[in-house]
Length: 233
Image (cartoon, rainbow, N blue to C red; front, top):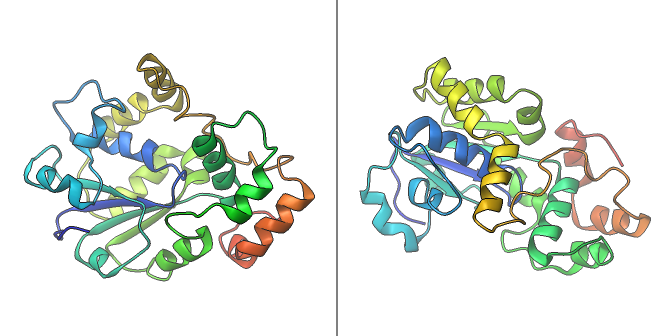
């Protein structure tokens, strides 16, 4: 990870947790001169916090600067402002499965839960690394499901906690440009029909076989679901 500064914002989450949605909102909110943000150009506006993106750290695409990450919490996060998104892991697994494999059904889903080598570790470990720091002034944690219910309220809450500038009209414009329907339609125009699939919550209901549930409970911390207010299987 590159050296980051207190004025910069890191947008983090476990993969397939709504990071890209909020990434588009923040891009429209702070990239004042960008009127058409797509999957093709968004990585130049909010790049990843990786050495390969080093040249972008010198460019002023956003004010404040925002960078994307899927990393667990680490000491470098103490040096900047952080937004962390949490999503029900049962939906995360489903979304991840379809995204990586291009599968048409859940035939191999149980195998995926048990055997896929997740590059950022298991969801429970990732989330716990962040929530133990949730009371810090430089960290705002938001749930994907709450964003779906009221994105206006959740965005306002995050920006206020981190003292990030915005007006009501700017937020409304950014949210309107970043609806799931708009993102999916624009991605399809670019020939990308798989990145945005459903964008809903509770996809896991009626999707997990008994064996898939067993595998999930074997590898993830079920108590964390309850701790975060998610319903049981």
